[in-house]
Length: 83
Image 1 (spheres, rainbow, N blue to C red):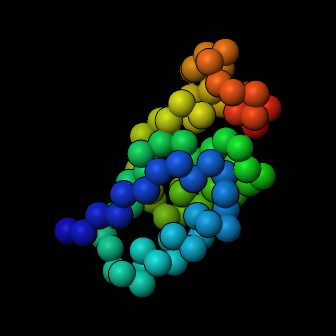
Image 2: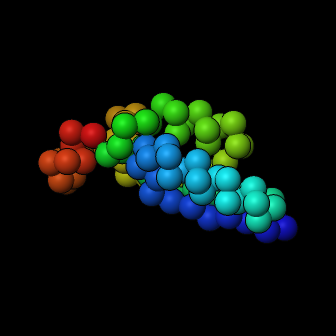
């Protein structure tokens, strides 16, 4: 079984789609995201939907945890806090 390991998408849908397309070209069996699917960029909902559609197993990153109220954002930089 071949795995694709990704991380730090940070709501960048365009880049995420390019990566998914490449993974499909390589015919990899499973995608695992090591966290930070959301944060910083403009398309968090779309990135979450794409991850669900692709059945990607995701580990909760600090930005993901902050979105659901499970992480303290006081240590985040100002840009991360605004995202």
